Length: 190
Image 1 (cartoon, rainbow, N blue to C red):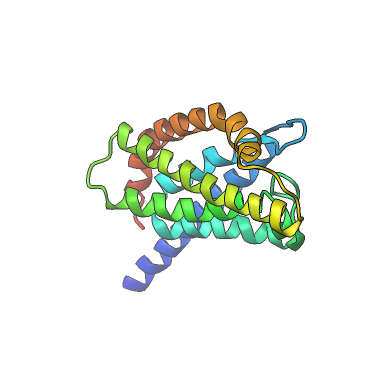
Image 2 (image 1 turned 60 degrees about the vertical axis):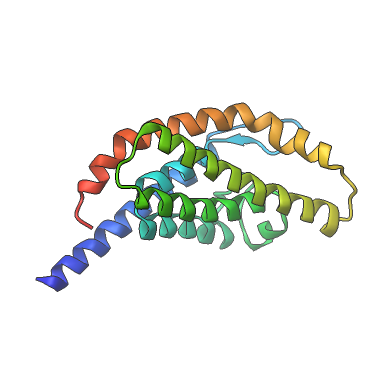
Protein backbone atom coordinates (compact mmCIF):
# COMPACT_ATOMS: atom_id res chain seq x y z
CA UNK A 1 0.00 0.00 0.00
CA UNK A 2 2.89 2.36 0.82
CA UNK A 3 4.55 1.59 -2.52
CA UNK A 4 1.32 2.42 -4.36
CA UNK A 5 1.08 5.71 -2.47
CA UNK A 6 4.68 6.65 -3.29
CA UNK A 7 4.10 5.77 -6.96
CA UNK A 8 0.92 7.85 -6.99
CA UNK A 9 2.74 10.78 -5.38
CA UNK A 10 5.50 10.55 -7.99
CA UNK A 11 2.97 10.48 -10.82
CA UNK A 12 1.14 13.52 -9.41
CA UNK A 13 4.43 15.44 -8.97
CA UNK A 14 5.60 14.57 -12.48
CA UNK A 15 2.23 15.47 -14.02
CA UNK A 16 2.00 18.84 -12.26
CA UNK A 17 5.63 19.59 -13.11
CA UNK A 18 5.08 18.77 -16.77
CA UNK A 19 1.93 20.89 -16.90
CA UNK A 20 3.57 23.95 -15.36
CA UNK A 21 6.77 23.49 -17.40
CA UNK A 22 4.55 23.57 -20.48
CA UNK A 23 2.86 26.76 -19.25
CA UNK A 24 6.26 28.46 -18.77
CA UNK A 25 7.23 27.36 -22.30
CA UNK A 26 3.96 28.72 -23.71
CA UNK A 27 4.64 31.97 -21.85
CA UNK A 28 7.80 32.50 -23.89
CA UNK A 29 5.74 32.43 -27.10
CA UNK A 30 3.22 34.98 -25.83
CA UNK A 31 5.38 37.98 -26.60
CA UNK A 32 5.37 41.58 -27.67
CA UNK A 33 8.50 42.52 -29.63
CA UNK A 34 10.30 45.61 -28.36
CA UNK A 35 12.68 47.68 -30.49
CA UNK A 36 16.31 47.28 -29.40
CA UNK A 37 15.47 45.22 -26.29
CA UNK A 38 14.18 41.92 -25.02
CA UNK A 39 10.60 41.10 -25.99
CA UNK A 40 7.85 41.35 -23.39
CA UNK A 41 6.70 37.82 -22.54
CA UNK A 42 4.30 36.25 -20.06
CA UNK A 43 6.89 33.83 -18.67
CA UNK A 44 7.16 35.63 -15.35
CA UNK A 45 3.41 35.21 -14.81
CA UNK A 46 3.74 31.44 -15.22
CA UNK A 47 6.93 31.28 -13.15
CA UNK A 48 5.20 33.09 -10.28
CA UNK A 49 2.14 30.87 -10.61
CA UNK A 50 4.33 27.76 -10.57
CA UNK A 51 6.01 28.83 -7.33
CA UNK A 52 2.78 29.92 -5.67
CA UNK A 53 0.70 26.87 -6.57
CA UNK A 54 3.02 23.85 -6.63
CA UNK A 55 4.86 22.17 -3.78
CA UNK A 56 8.63 22.69 -3.75
CA UNK A 57 9.56 19.44 -5.53
CA UNK A 58 7.08 19.92 -8.35
CA UNK A 59 7.84 23.62 -8.88
CA UNK A 60 11.59 23.04 -8.88
CA UNK A 61 11.25 20.13 -11.29
CA UNK A 62 9.05 22.22 -13.61
CA UNK A 63 11.58 25.06 -13.78
CA UNK A 64 14.65 22.80 -14.05
CA UNK A 65 12.95 20.90 -16.87
CA UNK A 66 12.19 24.17 -18.66
CA UNK A 67 15.83 25.28 -18.37
CA UNK A 68 17.15 21.88 -19.46
CA UNK A 69 14.88 21.67 -22.49
CA UNK A 70 15.93 25.15 -23.58
CA UNK A 71 19.63 24.46 -23.06
CA UNK A 72 19.55 21.24 -25.07
CA UNK A 73 18.23 23.18 -28.03
CA UNK A 74 14.46 23.52 -27.97
CA UNK A 75 13.64 27.15 -28.87
CA UNK A 76 11.57 27.77 -25.73
CA UNK A 77 13.50 30.74 -24.33
CA UNK A 78 12.35 34.18 -25.44
CA UNK A 79 15.33 34.37 -27.83
CA UNK A 80 15.60 30.73 -28.90
CA UNK A 81 17.50 27.94 -27.18
CA UNK A 82 20.67 25.90 -27.10
CA UNK A 83 23.74 25.77 -24.89
CA UNK A 84 25.07 29.00 -26.42
CA UNK A 85 22.12 30.80 -24.83
CA UNK A 86 24.17 30.86 -21.61
CA UNK A 87 26.18 33.67 -23.21
CA UNK A 88 23.07 35.70 -24.03
CA UNK A 89 22.62 38.69 -21.72
CA UNK A 90 19.06 37.72 -20.80
CA UNK A 91 19.95 34.17 -19.64
CA UNK A 92 20.24 35.57 -16.11
CA UNK A 93 16.47 35.93 -16.07
CA UNK A 94 16.16 32.18 -16.74
CA UNK A 95 18.45 31.50 -13.77
CA UNK A 96 16.31 33.94 -11.79
CA UNK A 97 13.21 31.92 -12.73
CA UNK A 98 14.62 28.84 -11.02
CA UNK A 99 15.83 30.59 -7.87
CA UNK A 100 12.65 32.63 -7.60
CA UNK A 101 10.40 29.59 -8.02
CA UNK A 102 12.22 27.68 -5.29
CA UNK A 103 12.06 30.60 -2.85
CA UNK A 104 8.41 31.33 -3.64
CA UNK A 105 7.49 27.65 -3.09
CA UNK A 106 9.39 27.44 0.19
CA UNK A 107 7.72 30.58 1.54
CA UNK A 108 4.24 29.61 0.32
CA UNK A 109 4.55 26.10 1.76
CA UNK A 110 5.60 27.52 5.15
CA UNK A 111 2.42 29.59 5.52
CA UNK A 112 -0.35 28.01 7.51
CA UNK A 113 -3.08 30.26 6.10
CA UNK A 114 -2.70 32.10 2.84
CA UNK A 115 -4.44 35.27 1.79
CA UNK A 116 -4.29 37.36 -1.36
CA UNK A 117 -1.96 39.99 0.14
CA UNK A 118 0.54 37.31 1.12
CA UNK A 119 0.50 35.99 -2.45
CA UNK A 120 1.07 39.50 -3.76
CA UNK A 121 3.99 40.08 -1.36
CA UNK A 122 5.55 36.72 -2.22
CA UNK A 123 5.12 37.40 -5.95
CA UNK A 124 6.73 40.83 -5.56
CA UNK A 125 9.69 39.17 -3.84
CA UNK A 126 9.86 36.65 -6.69
CA UNK A 127 9.98 39.40 -9.32
CA UNK A 128 12.64 41.28 -7.35
CA UNK A 129 14.78 38.11 -7.23
CA UNK A 130 14.33 37.53 -10.98
CA UNK A 131 15.31 41.10 -11.81
CA UNK A 132 18.30 41.26 -9.47
CA UNK A 133 19.77 38.07 -10.93
CA UNK A 134 18.71 38.98 -14.47
CA UNK A 135 20.16 42.47 -14.40
CA UNK A 136 23.42 41.40 -12.74
CA UNK A 137 23.90 38.69 -15.36
CA UNK A 138 22.94 41.12 -18.14
CA UNK A 139 25.53 43.62 -16.85
CA UNK A 140 28.19 40.90 -16.65
CA UNK A 141 27.61 39.57 -20.18
CA UNK A 142 27.15 43.01 -21.74
CA UNK A 143 29.89 44.99 -20.01
CA UNK A 144 32.45 42.37 -18.96
CA UNK A 145 32.13 39.49 -21.43
CA UNK A 146 31.23 41.61 -24.47
CA UNK A 147 33.49 44.47 -23.32
CA UNK A 148 30.91 47.27 -23.50
CA UNK A 149 30.58 50.22 -21.18
CA UNK A 150 26.88 50.83 -20.52
CA UNK A 151 25.94 52.83 -17.43
CA UNK A 152 23.71 51.67 -14.58
CA UNK A 153 21.08 54.19 -15.75
CA UNK A 154 21.08 52.59 -19.21
CA UNK A 155 20.40 49.16 -17.68
CA UNK A 156 17.57 50.53 -15.52
CA UNK A 157 16.01 52.37 -18.47
CA UNK A 158 16.40 49.43 -20.85
CA UNK A 159 15.87 46.33 -18.73
CA UNK A 160 13.71 47.39 -15.81
CA UNK A 161 11.48 50.42 -16.42
CA UNK A 162 9.86 49.34 -19.71
CA UNK A 163 8.82 46.03 -18.12
CA UNK A 164 7.64 47.39 -14.74
CA UNK A 165 3.95 47.87 -15.67
CA UNK A 166 3.80 44.34 -17.12
CA UNK A 167 5.41 42.88 -13.99
CA UNK A 168 2.86 44.62 -11.75
CA UNK A 169 0.07 43.06 -13.82
CA UNK A 170 1.81 39.64 -13.63
CA UNK A 171 2.13 39.91 -9.84
CA UNK A 172 -1.57 40.72 -9.42
CA UNK A 173 -2.81 38.11 -11.93
CA UNK A 174 -0.54 35.33 -10.63
CA UNK A 175 -1.56 36.11 -7.04
CA UNK A 176 -5.28 36.12 -7.88
CA UNK A 177 -4.90 32.89 -9.88
CA UNK A 178 -2.93 31.16 -7.12
CA UNK A 179 -5.44 32.29 -4.50
CA UNK A 180 -8.18 30.54 -6.48
CA UNK A 181 -6.20 27.51 -7.77
CA UNK A 182 -4.00 26.47 -4.83
CA UNK A 183 -6.84 25.11 -2.65
CA UNK A 184 -7.65 22.61 -5.41
CA UNK A 185 -4.00 21.62 -5.95
CA UNK A 186 -3.48 20.99 -2.24
CA UNK A 187 -6.47 18.60 -2.23
CA UNK A 188 -4.64 16.33 -4.69
CA UNK A 189 -2.86 13.67 -2.59
CA UNK A 190 0.88 14.04 -3.04
